[in-house]
Image (cartoon, rainbow, N blue to C red; front, side, top):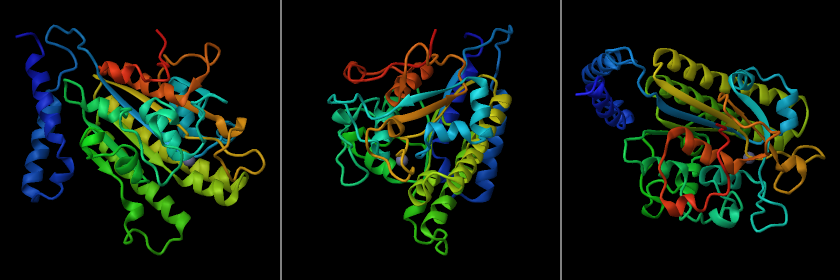
Length: 357
Ligand SMILES: [Zn+2]
């Protein structure tokens, strides 16, 4: 038996058990405590080096975060300590959404269109999402979580989202046509639950959902560290539509940045405890906003098409080498995670990995 083999096998079994994380919450306390002890023991036994001190292969992990509708000029002007802290480890760069102007790939700078381009690595002429509602996604273009679940090895997945349609519509979670169930950890549905913060107005209520989603995401990242996680937060887009550019939007950006700080702190704490984990963190937005007042988006102006990508990876390509697009995030995750893809999925990708050699 090679050194470390026993421990690696054990870890896989425990990760398989963690698939039922949410189900544990419904079990009697003594059972939960027993499981906690088991997990704690396994965590301690998880080796960082083999018996002869050789560093074992690190376990790749990815967290990507979409903060809705923050123009690049705003994120660059406002003091954002959380996003800056992520980028301080790696990079920050501008990027674009909306496909290629005047080409079949040209895509509306609308939220769901942007998410879907990130999730599938393709533009709207392929994934077929051109609006937020009344859509019929083309599931022939696999989302990144379907790819994750296609791996020979067990890959755990997490979704923490203020918009439930991300899971149920865009990714067709649970639908056979979309590859079946994809998520081991889910925190969404709060905005559809009438009992959640009913006294708040629409904008404040979504802000409260963002807070709840962040809290659950940070807790799960720290305790269970799904191999691939997406956190989606909405507050800034609501403020943009209501107030446009100005101090209220700046304050919303700082508030959302504090949520990024919570997530980043969870990843850092996790990394310090489990040094065999290799974390890629990507923070981005789904579109810019109009130049006139920042209240709208959907068109093809420079400000609407310009987004940004912050990452903790020191391997991200420099903007001087080539311009990045939202469709580059999918192949970047694939490379970091070491995912295998069916040939027909890989052949349809519009972007390329942002990781340099
Ligand atoms: Zn949006």
